Structures are given as structure tokens and as C-alpha cells.
Length: 349
Image 1 (spheres, rainbow, N blue to C red):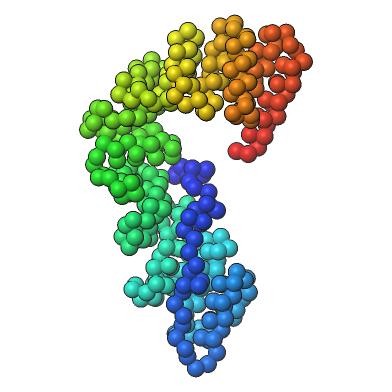
Image 2 (image 1 turned 90 degrees about the vertical axis):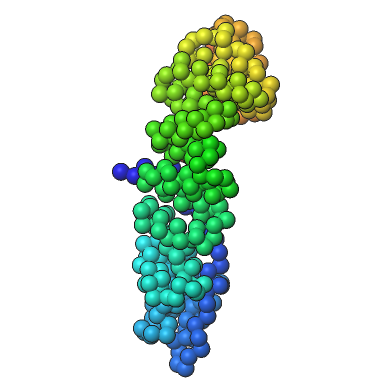
């Protein structure tokens, strides 16, 4: 089953990215004697004014006419697309695209809406041919390249995904950076097995490539291979010593091994490199708590919570610090706040 839910761009954001005034730009039907062309023009004006339901009602009342059928189907498809009724949009747009001349603006708009409608319904295999067609028309359209790349990932075609993302970032598809970027996209979509192969190929092409060892290290830690993860993070630091996230993940990895003393230095370095990121502060606060240094633990956790006041782990750790310091009333409030934040976070998922 395709891993689709919750891993593609939100519908509203995607539609916004590809917003275009199709109703306003649709080619006007040629003036014909009789009322059909006039009604089509009126419906198009309604669509342009945002009166979608009124436009649909008018368009559906029209009798079949060879001079207006394609335009009516296109406008109905566009109307349903605006209403996020993608199944009906596909029904009407398919007719318009099948009948319309391929060199027309209306045809291109129809193909774009068809591709996005199929994509938004999760019909990725059906969406890909349309997205490829749009990509050929607009090779510099980064939004289309991104959506096409995601579609290839979800249909388990990492090679084609790499080509799409390489075009998006204007790099060669067989270059080390292309393999790295594709791996990062694969990780985001939770295709870690494919991502690991891409990262290994990236390092084969360029052993000094920044962030490749880091990503492999994160994958190793994710799969509970902490020692391997530490080794890879250390390799990352050797080639990319100003990368604060590598020190943060390294310190965090040491805490998983309960190596509290070893964790301190990389966490401090991460903070010095990126003082506005709360993550290493919270982990360092945990380290001080485990080492029994309650004063430093409280100071650093409160600093983290100023940056990230809704961090559940930060509040829970601070509650433990206060509890161990016998400040029970304050600890109770922090525990309660942490629980409220956790409940809210769970509801938002």
C-alpha cells in the first residue's frame, strides 16, 4: 500500500502553490449565434468572480453543443477543482483534455489541474504522466518538479525521483549532491531503505560531501545502532566541523548509552554554533539532571523553554529537577503543564 497519508504536502498549501486564474485565462468561446456561447461566457464570469456554485448550475443547464462542449467541460472541471471536488474535476477535465487541441492554453490548464487532482486524491500513478507533461512544458517550475519527485518516491521509483529533484535544484542527476538531496527527500517520506542506498552512493562519489555521513548516522540511530551512528556523526564532524546539528545528535546519542560525561562537550559545541535552537539545551539539561547538578539543569532548561515554551520534554525534565530539589508545588505545576501540552499535541496530530 502506498505510504500516502500525512506525508504529502497539505491540500491547501499545494493548491496555493499552483494557484492560477484558470477561469480568467480560459480561452473565450468563439462568438456564435444563439445563447450557448453567451451562457458559457456568463458562467466564466461567475467563476472569475468566485461564484462557483452559480457557475456550475449554469453550465450544467446547457444543452450539448459541438462548439461549446470542450469549454463547458473545462469550466466545470475548473469549478469542481476550486471546490476541492477532485473526482468530479477529473471527470470533466478528462473530457476537455481528450477533445481539446494540444496547443491551446485551455489544454495546458486542463492537464495541470488533472495532474494535481489525481495527486491530491492519492492517485499517484495516474498523476505522473500529467505531471511529466507539465514538467516538459515548464522545466524550471520547481513546484511541479517537487510534486513529481514526491510522486516517484511514493511509487518507489527513486531514480526518477532523483532526476526530478536534480532538475529542481539545477544539478546533475548523477552527482553526489543529487543523491544526497534525494536521500533527504526519501527520509522525509519514510523510505529509509532507499535513502540509505542513495547516501552510500553519494559518499562513493564524494567522501567529503557534507551532511551525507550525518544522515546515515541519523538512520543508524533510528534503527538503534547507536555505536554505528556515533561513528558516522564523528565522520561528519571531521569533514563539516561547523555543523551544529552533528554535535547535537552526537551528544544525544551518548545519552542513549548513558554516557553523561561524554555527552556534555558536543552538546555545548552545538549550543555555541546554534544558540537559538532549543534541542541541545534540553538534552544538556537532562544530562545535568542525571549527573545530579540540579542548579545547572534548571538554568539551562529554563533557557530552553524561553525559546520553545511548548516543549513537552523540556517541561517534564524541569518538573523532575524541581521534584528532586524538593520544590514540590512548582514541580506539580510543571508536570501538569507538560501533560496539557502533550494532550494538545496528540490532538493536533
